[in-house]
Image 1 (cartoon, rainbow, N blue to C red):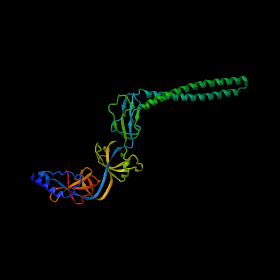
Image 2 (image 1 turned 90 degrees about the vertical axis):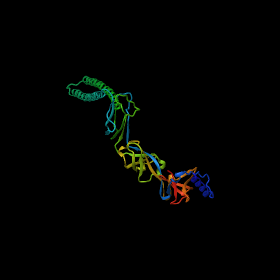
Image 3 (image 1 turned 180 degrees about the vertical axis):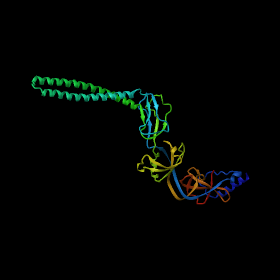
Image 4 (image 1 turned 90 degrees about the horizontal axis):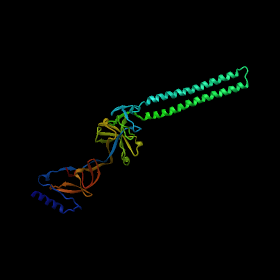
Amino acid sequence: MTGLMLMLSLFSLTTGCQDKPEEAPPLVLESGDEAAEYSLTEVMKGTLEETISLQCYYRKNAEQEVYFPVSGKQIRKICVQEGDIVKKGDLLAELAIGNIEDQIDELQYRIERNELQLAYIDEDEKLDEESRYNSLVYMSKRTDEDVEDYEKQLQVSRDRNEQKRNSYRDSIEFDKKKLAALQTELSQSRVYAQFDGKVSKVEKGLIGTTSNIEKCIMTVVDDQEGYFECEKEQYMSYLTAESYSMTVMFGNGRGEYELVPRDRDSWGEKQYFSIKKGDNIEGLEVDDKGEIHVVTERKENALYLPNECIRNAGDKNYVYVVTEEGLRDVVWVTVGLHGDGVTEILEGLQEGDKVIRRG
């Protein structure tokens, strides 16, 4: 205890004749063996970079969230599993629709048959009229009554044929409307892949349940190379480097990556980066989050200290130094840039000065 009191007295004597800064922080000296336990760090000079971390998210060029277009139908079949590779147009899932396909085949057959019958009527009518006309022309003794009879029979034949046409037309129109309704129902009962890709997610226990147009049943992402997307338009002026380091903290894709700007001319509200290299590219999934480290300011020949050396008193900064007598003393400093774990010293210290480091 006597040693501690002596150190405090010496400190008071050495500092009493100096101008004290306003609001000087209290100094705490440890007693006993702890009084000598501290580490010193030199003020260093070199290149200092101030950086910010911008969040970005992993994206694919295309992503298909799959929904059934109708509600209230029983889900009959899920054709894929998570991780499956699909091609554009592959069937993904379907609803129970009974024998709609057989009905569609029957209607298509009837429509084609009736359209063919219509064509036959036209051909038969043409041949019949030619035959009637030739019979009239080649009559040896043709009278006005013959001509009148020819015209009456011709009109009767035309009326009869028109009735047949109308009957076929009505049948065709009715069947086409029914066919369109069934085809719509069929199309709404199935969902297909919109592009080549990979099934990234499938809801469990869907078969036998009822469809809901608001429920996403699966997600398909394209199998092309992914990219990272950032939404920091206010920092675009800093994004001028050729490449950037990025860290993904969570998920199967966690690790360190190097990104390069992509389609810079298209940048606006969003900025895009391709992956040059990385620890777990194959493990990346859509919406995985990373942080890009961007330099906002750079200084050469800057004085700096580790952050652990700098302390605060209100809006002022100071460090502890050790006097020749082995006592701690306060030096007030003016700071500048804040780099990666270090802070620039603008005033108060010189290169090589030694300060006490916390921790």
